[in-house]
Image 1 (cartoon, rainbow, N blue to C red):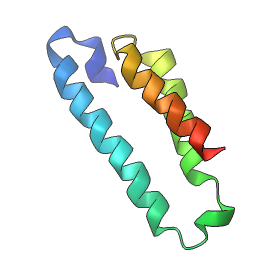
Image 2: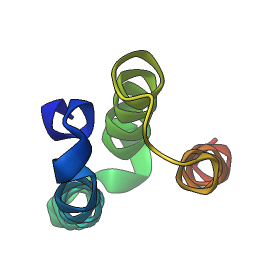
Image 3: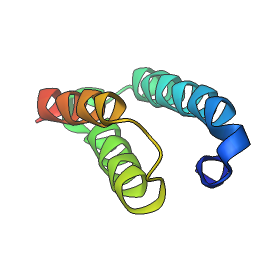
Image 4: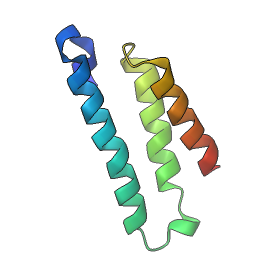
Length: 74
């Protein structure tokens, strides 16, 4: 998220966001008791708060996609 603060690094930061989101799914899929676990929701929620609080340069579409993912987890 620090990369979003540097104008010349915005595109690189978006690549890292994509990798992080994919890792959330990988971690979630490795949990044997995922039906009774809200880890993915918690990771996405924390990630959403960090995007909103820390990185003002992430576009609105990216934020909306994350909100939709959160809604699907509830």
